[in-house]
Length: 508
Image (cartoon, rainbow, N blue to C red):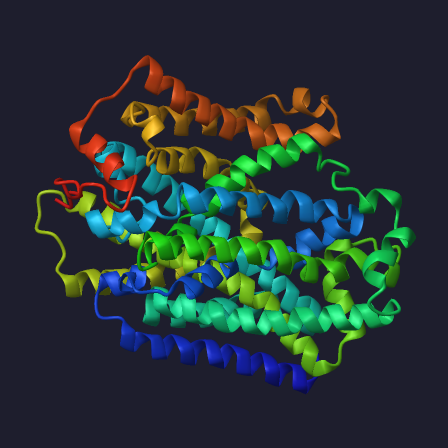
């Protein structure tokens, strides 16, 4: 990178800090810090939801998939999320702001004390919060690798740069800072992505390359399903995406909780889905064309980064790199905010049982301390990743396996069809999903491998979430659970006119 690229990148990081500091003026208590006081406009919530849904992995791992497999990437990833948001617009998105309005929640797990009980809530809170530290640490490392490829910056300095900037604006401005920086990052990656698209098209002969490149690429690159990304894999990911993007990934639930009401949450979900339908076509096209422009790459993970350095002038290289960082910083800052909400509203009250609850001022201070601590711990993980050997990758896989088992009692617990699935169903489904993942990945991995390469990912991904769902539903049928407060809560979430539950969430 030349000096112009460094200036562009420095301006980007500076802008993120300025936005975060400005957002501080909008934060007066923990509700502002974690849910923007329920005043976030639908368009900002939708853009923030979209930006918080993927990280720099898109430009590394997904670039490799696009290079080797082609259009199938768009089908199983983007179309899967579009389907998830269509479902969420009807079923899940409007229920999140109703929870805030009727129970005063500011954490996505907070309502589970009323829906199930305290032990079930704590199991989900501790397991998700602990493992997320390693997941976010890995994202810092991925961003640092990109900066190392582009500019030769040592990994530890890359981690401190991207993580340090995020730590400042997230700790100061809370969800308002996250959402506003998400918007700024959306504009930057929009310009950067369009620049890459235009330059790529010009190198391939103009706009006609949109449809002519497929005749020059291997035939399987034009197919909607290819390699290990089969129809079955796609169907499995429809379920996983539905769980993850509608709140099973806690930071995405925060965007809906922050929306003004159920109608605005629906619009936010629809906007995010529309962006996932259109934007990946722009983003992925240079990745699909990379085999023509950079044939024979032995490391396809570097294809997008190499395209950038080969095709763009210095200033635009800085802009594209900023766009890559934008996704990671958007996801990690929103992760930090959501995890901190869980710590402050779900974990700390349990540890303080029998003592007086936190005051509004103390709650805001605890939120900032928890955000700072979470990001700092994730940076420590990233900086010491070499000492983890294979453990870091192991824990990232385990977090991926836990998304489904944690999300199932969270999301399906809102729906009236599963009202008889109680605390036992929630804990058993979580445990069953985790056990099945461990068995398929580490005990029966040889048997799974013999199914064929195309089935390994499908079985490993599908097993935990399907078993968790079956256990959750069947337990409710075999041992139906009845609790007036839980039933009242479910009824209150079913419509805007529903009765407000009398029992608020306990913080004792």
